[in-house]
Length: 306
Image 1 (cartoon, rainbow, N blue to C red):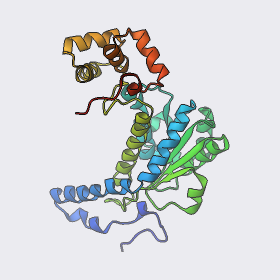
Image 2 (cartoon, rainbow, N blue to C red):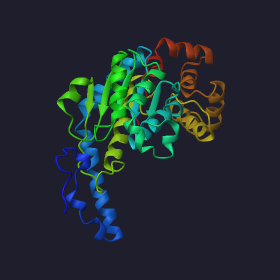
Image 3 (cartoon, rainbow, N blue to C red):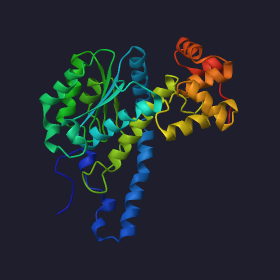
Image 4 (tube, helix red, strand yellow):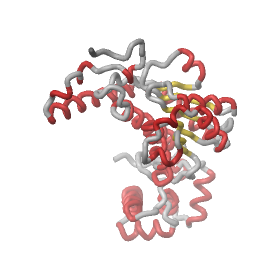
């Protein structure tokens, strides 16, 4: 007999009537069902735009006070938090400690499921203590079902240490959850194609929210010029090519001149733009940027539209 789990109000645990006979479908029909469900994710995330913006403002305020952003999760949720965190230094030249992912079970859980780790309440509090979380930090708990004990314990400890907290889930938030945290983000993506498999729509929604959260925060911090990734530090050939192309676009240089300027700027694109636009050496360019809190437009003006 079918049906959702008795008395379980969590959307993540309910059966999806649109995929109820997926095991009888052809391969292309299975792909079509999954794709149709995935199309609902962006709209669900969009419904949470106000809460996401609130979270961005909290994160930016914390960063400006020297604080950090922590993601806390178990399983897929934890891995997505770690993934977003580790992308920040190469993309926006942030200190590796500025955005951190904390996952139940530690580093081993990144490559091998540690299902029991999500129930370890003591570990949640201990992992927060180990990172010295404090009043300038923002801690976002990620749990698609909203019930992961490890995440709740970590957030409780973070609040005790004075941090501001948020919660990201893909089911209906309880009034108690909303009262506990500074912001709650709840994209309601609906039941999964495979019941309870939150690595699917819930995982996609989580990735979208985290992408938006950190990208918007970095834009607010001045790490983007127009829509160009100008605060990147050249550490690989791909980034060297991207940096040179940005200088070609913003300064009207040919590739050879752009590459030479990037070299003189120590591989930092934002510094190179100031040098090229104002005719300064690297040290003075960095000084001007520091005085403008890193916001490039305050130093060289707005970027010309495309």
